[in-house]
Image (cartoon, rainbow, N blue to C red; front, top):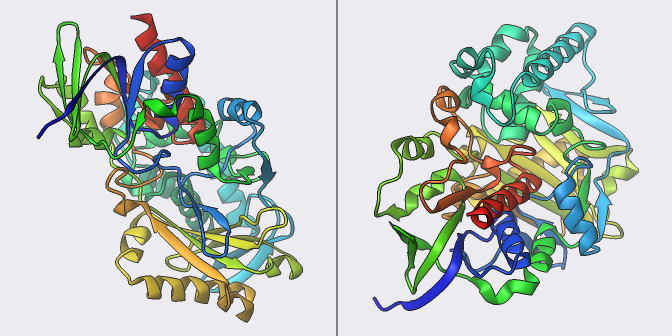
Length: 450
């Protein structure tokens, strides 16, 4: 196979928010670089798509919160239009097919369950503040917390069915997996990284507050515009060879000699690359212990957000399978857009059904809550990130029990001339676009300092 030869200061692998942030930093410093992306687009786990009726929907990451300062800097820099996620009216809580309405983040339930849920969230928030963001494995109880799953902790500390079910649905929404799949230490770090569990669950004032009028991919494209000639699409990296003074990076059509390489990928995807000089064994073992979450997004588009006329917010919390959480993502002066999430084990099951069955089930579920009008959308689409070869899932890689304490110290550590980015390596807002920007800037700074 013939490859074109290139020479540059740094190769960046992955053109999501982390890779573009690293490239932007190097570009501002006047360093030469090339950015290789396996897909035919930039964005990574961010993907804005225009539907047949013209509606723009974010099939990947979409929200930004008021405390996510880095992505807000980009937003103001490029004067990108935003709007707040609709958060007025009655939210729906459905347990065992009984529907109740409430306002705010915490569902309305019987006093005992409500107290139980509040105490559980408060306990988790207090514990998360004891986890140092720079080094979670140094927490006083790190070994104990990393030896059990979040599910074990919930079962011990949350007693009532409704409170426990609410907690589990919230965890699915935040991590795109079941509480039994992640270590308690990882959950505590992740919540602390975004402030606390309340901030990760909330709309107004929280992680789901604001959306982009033209989608989250639009902001990334604007940031990348000044160095778009340095981005090469459809170039999956096959191997990396290290030598004394640099690296050689090979894709199917390119061979690049560089001083440094930044891998802006989910840790699990690094296993797709052949490292001719073996990486430190802890780094390799780490890749095996950070599986991606499983998430599907299902959009139903209507001529009008008719649920608002009924006094509803579009937000649903339900124990009916498989659709547990919904949001109203209607753009200003746009068509009504209801978004349903399917996550964790439910996403793995749901993707195995035919597209027709998925559509029918989503609309049937919406009709259960909002009436027959929900059965007549002008468009419907869904997206399962498990199917994405170059993502492997969504939202992020999660630490399994025992992984933070054994392998956490090497998460961000360079391996020779190889540096690591990706939202999983962020200190603040790990798992979010803001965390991806932080990680790319940090990796670029490491390259610039050497």
